[in-house]
Amino acid sequence: MSAVIDRSWRDPALLGKALPAVLLQTTCFLAPLLMTIALTFQRTRDFQLSWTWSLHTWTDVFTKAHYWTILGHTLFMATLCVALCLLIAFPVAYALASRLRAFQNHVKVLITFAFLTDATLKTFGWVLFLDKNGAANYLARGLGFEGDAVNILFTDWATMLGMVYNLLAFAIFTIYLSIDEIDRSLVLAAYDAGASKFRAFWEVTLPLARPGIWAGAVLIFLLAVGVFLEPKVLGGGKSPMSAELIRQTFETRVNWPLGAALTMVLMTVAVFVVLLFNRVYSLKRHLGPA
Amino acid sequence: MTGYPQPTPWLNARAEARLADVLLYGATGAVLLFFYIPIFTLIAFSFQEGRFLTLPFEGFSLRWYGELFRNSNAGNALWNSTLIAVVAMVFATLIGTLAAIVAVRYRFRLRIPFTGLAAAPLAFPQLLLGIVLLLWFSVLGRQFNFNTGLVTAIIGHVVYIAPFAMVIVAVQVFNFDATLEDAARDCGASNWAVYRYITLPLLWPGIFSAAIFSFLLSWGNFYLTYSLSGAARTLPTFVFSGIATGSSPLYPAIATVVFIPGILLVILADRMRRRAA
Image (cartoon, rainbow over all chains, first blue to last red; front, side, top):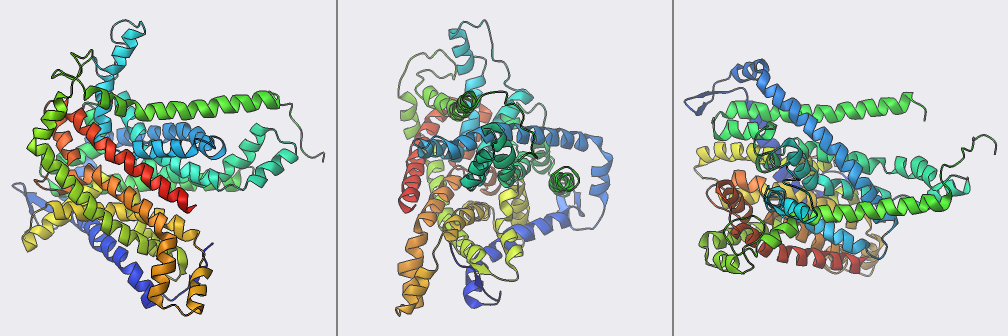
């Protein structure tokens, strides 16, 4: 275990190492973010940004129900995606940490590769698989199903499939890490105290894996809110989500202030939902039975 | 010992263990299959003889690999992808490694804000990060007269990937035995020698995995490149514009070509990590 060294934040050795990251994230993350906020209070004239302060964009955002319908749809899809990812990822992460001793590394390599492979290509692969004349229907016909057994391409189901596909690995990794850290003797103690395997899992392993579950859920939710590839390529662009709306605002309508405002709304609402869940969750822990 | 009511288990221990095994192995197998469905589909379609991406195939051939080889746009995209990925990898790994050392080994007053700032882009949707940066570079570009291109794409990639590198290296730093450094210093090693012969070799496996991870994240990145690369195309954006206008087995062939270095690098990273453990 590495020893933690107390240092003043002005210490040159520390400052030298921290500076690159601080500079990078200040000039290329924080500053652009602040500018985006400032942009929402500007106006456009003839598709050109003019730096005149006004609340025009915000009144527009808050009076058009259309934006909020799409936002609601996006939040719903993101929440469903989180639930599905956690449900699917947990048994896999648990198996990785508790079983599969011999194959553990192979499985990890396979998952890592699938995760790191270009998302555009993988999403396109799903199109080929799900297409009417694609691989899924070909296989289904081979198995004796009539007609087009698999017919979900260009629906919300296909979008959801793509989202879960592209984000699942985040949950597997975070949950695996937290299960892997659990002290095995705690589980053994539960067995000694007479708990069945299931009960030990339910009352020891699961609560201790909470940090990983929570981290995975937050990460996936924030990323799922911003997906654009899946609704466009797999969903056929029929029910746009917020990211697509934002992209259109920038590219087709060339309205930067509006696009910036919609971006801020999306991020704020997403972070707010996460904080709200956190709050409800910790309240429950305080009030409910331990 | 009487406090807890002992419910009769609804399964005996053996049946319970078997059920758990079936569920866990089954889930892992199913997820692996799920992960590889589109990947195998792409590989299969790349050998299609005909022009259309439908089954059954007209025949198997390597025709599209030949076409890919002659297609200069694809070659260009491949070169851009590699260039961006290599440069982004170097900067992201360097910045991430230094940040990881600061975040894990030192305790100082601004540690929490520092870690938060350095890791923030991790939880920011990529498309939005791309848009925010595009706005930033457009405004700056108008002021200082430059256009978005490969350089802005690289900057975007580094912003997004450095936090990943930081997290990966941080795990290695966490397991780092600092007394080794002290021992070297006690034996009269200079600061530089300690770094060169103790710190770096011990952290190397983490740095190496971080570098490979960074390379692949950048290599396969779509959202940021899409917003920030201006007129330049990388493989993912090339594929995206291709499949948006009508597809041919050229794209599955590109995919298959891209998979090979990817899986080799992942295996290499895993070897390094395991040798260190």
